[in-house]
Amino acid sequence: MTTKTHTPVLNVLVVGATGSIGRLVVDEALRRGHVVRALVRDASRARALASAAQRIEGDLTRVDTLLPAVEGVDAIVFTHGANGGGRNGVEQVDYGAVRNILQALGGRSVRVALMTSIGATNRDGAYNRSTQAHDWKRRGERLVRASGMPYTVVRPGWFDYNAADQHRLVFLQGDKRQAGDPSDGVVARQQIAQVLVHSLTSDAARNKTLELVAERGAAQSDLDSLFGALLVDQPEALDGILDEPNMPLVSEPARVKEDYERLLATSTPIHGAIPDWIEHVSDEQYRADFTGQAN
Ligand SMILES: NC(=O)c1ccc[n+]([C@@H]2O[C@H](COP(=O)([O-])OP(=O)(O)OC[C@H]3O[C@@H](n4cnc5c(N)ncnc54)[C@H](OP(=O)(O)O)[C@@H]3O)[C@@H](O)[C@H]2O)c1
Image (tube, rainbow, N blue to C red; front, side):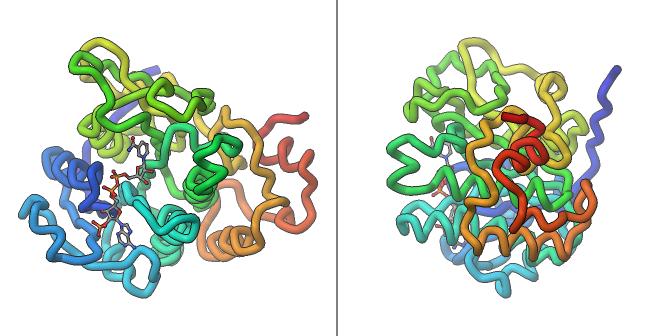
């Protein structure tokens, strides 16, 4: 079966547009002919962005400031990051940005590319135990999957730790590399931007979750073949298809469950109505029902 790739011109919102990946996403999206809107906190910090990109100000921690940013967009690329602020920062920004942008959309469906991180499902490592950054990024992934919008979740390896001849992209699933250092995988920032932007118009990338790393060799020109080889996430699952089911919803903070409820009340989930699992489902049922993996 051949996979069709559409290449329409999209109105693309880049979240985190002044960041080290976001600014490359802006350039890549423009290069591919899209109309680009860059969400920035402070326009004076966005002077280095390509002049062809529209700047729009907004604070990811405040929904009310995000309504103009999402108006009329067809696609959103999330590349934001708290970069400080401790546990509160990762909750408010890494997770809050996804929640707030989806809320600002008010149930309108757009194509989403969400960048998180390799190791996002590693809860026990020293990094997550001290920062909870993995957990909050993963909760953002879960909101995107629960939204019913078409999406691609990209979990890159260590930015720009690649050697000069390390550009052959490798797409992984299951988030098995959890050393918490560059031995987990490395990838050039430029290639992360290419993968994120390409996913927006690739049928083969739809509703997939991947870890993105690079090995020795030349960059491939055909990203659809790489996306096409991946498994699709289960429609009912909050996690990626091969992720370890180590974050049972029943044990999640009440405010996170409330965010799911609020999101589901305004969206059209692909898997129909979400029942009363938030309060009643057991860990075992959760594994079986939402990850397809029984104990
Ligand atoms: N470094 C790695 O090897 C690696 C690997 C995998 C994943 N990651 C993850 O990738 C993420 C992004 O990395 P990066 O290097 O691109 O980060 P970055 O350069 O610090 O960019 C973060 C972006 O988020 C924006 N932002 C933060 N808080 C905001 C708010 N309240 N409202 C609006 N915008 C806000 C920043 O805007 P301002 O310019 O206004 O601050 C900036 O545009 C990080 O969270 C990191 O954990 C990193």
